[in-house]
Length: 221
Image (tube, rainbow, N blue to C red; front, side, top):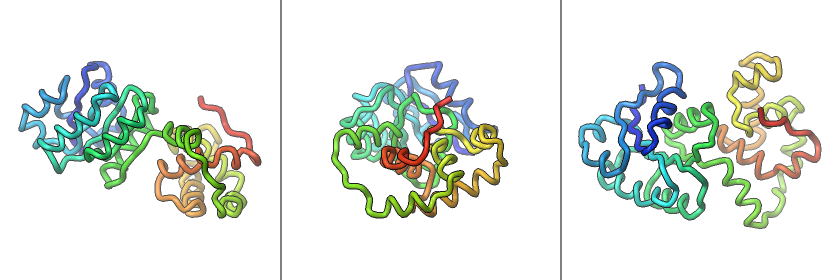
């Protein structure tokens, strides 16, 4: 079981975090209203496996810096109220393993935290939209080939992955078995040269215009 230390002034979000994961996977063992309070409890810091830092985006970088000074080996994930590129940069520069926004779906949040447990860094899906708007990019030379390589069902499944659906939700929506969903996702990951759902979703978002030239996206539920 992964022991979480949670920092957020919002009592409602503390209880919500405790409820997102399947039984036996995560447990919120310590909860604090602020960074200073958490740092003051050495036992709480020592006993956790991961730190979840909630609150405003503007203070996230400073909060991560203080927490890393007190507990340098603990992975930290920021759950911000909104996406801020400045805050995101400061957060990772300070040593965080993840930066997400609270609007993320429960399933996507759980899977993102699992990726951090495995040593991956996680980013908000909204970041891809901002990158597309703010930086010109050339069409990936391999896009057309990889796009053609995706079967219609793999493409459809990956559209739901992009929207944050879990495998069970995708299976229920499309009327197929869980194992079939996993097979389609694994095949798509191989063809897209990505390693996980976060990277796959970012790739789908980054190439949204080109991809939508052949298919219609499912609507978010």
